[in-house]
Image (cartoon, rainbow, N blue to C red):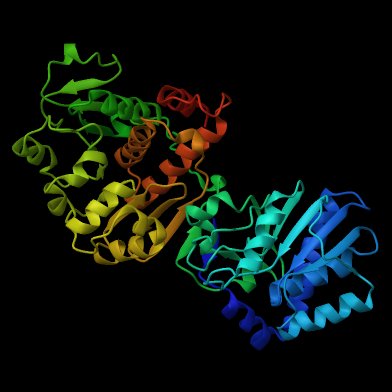
Length: 466
């Protein structure tokens, strides 16, 4: 798990004030980190084009050029004249070293984007637009210095944003890097040391980035147990029964001792697998509930109220976000909500937090997640997307490991089953959401078939190999 920050200027200032580390020293360490990365990946004499802006991001690029100039064919391209004191100083040093300058954006082995760093919140000029568009088209390995130019402080991207193969970010991870929109531009991400241990450089935060290694699986460590020791998940089986059946199968595979589908159809007509139980009533020994997947209009308002008239931990998904009962559910103590963006805007409207469209939500996913969790601090929210956001009260986590492989009907039903499984086995709602989400994305990474071919059955089959 890694910390995320809105901005790092305050972290830099702390280095100056508390540790007597100068701005110059931090910049030199940033350049050395980029130098080490390039030397480890590309042979000497490789052609390296470094495109520099007028501020400190450009200064980082000039310092890098100076460090590489002897062993590599390095050229500096200046988008604008240096303006910040550090950029002016680094320009002077590069000139004194005889680093070559170019006025052409020609083919090379590596192109380094050092045009703009964190804090950008405007729109590129036509001149900068043209430069970014041109270097994006170069047949070269593309390396972003700190963040890809065009990525704004709120996570939105300019029309022409640098598309990096790798992003070498300075000191700490920035939250803006993990908006859904930013996912197409970052490439591989590495945090560079600025001359001080990262654990010291980083301050306090309430936003975190999840690593796949954070996953805690529900391994069985006690010998004297039985099926009841591992919980009983009850799942509402609605109009589209296949959704709840997929959830049930994934829950059973993820360690739940018992799984029951609760519905009002004849079980013989539903083709339910033998390993899953079916009932017209909520089993008395249930330890958690799941509701919403494929629910449709199968349950009457009375039947749905009866199913949910208890204090059991509950995971809610899909159709239920459009139903009036959601307002009542928001009062529950142990509740996980797993909406996709369209469902979340319905939830925000119903909760009288905001009346927005999906486009507005996607521009401000962090903002609206915080607003919802502030109003309902006892609820755990898992907002689906290219980067999943999980929040409870004033603490938030981003799972960045989702892949397009999961963009297939039924993937969300599998996630609901994984969450329900952990709830039934006694995980807290927050832990259930975090570890089920990590398991879900790890299953996608483990899939060895073509990236378009994954099915929910593949995900269920892979659970046993986590």
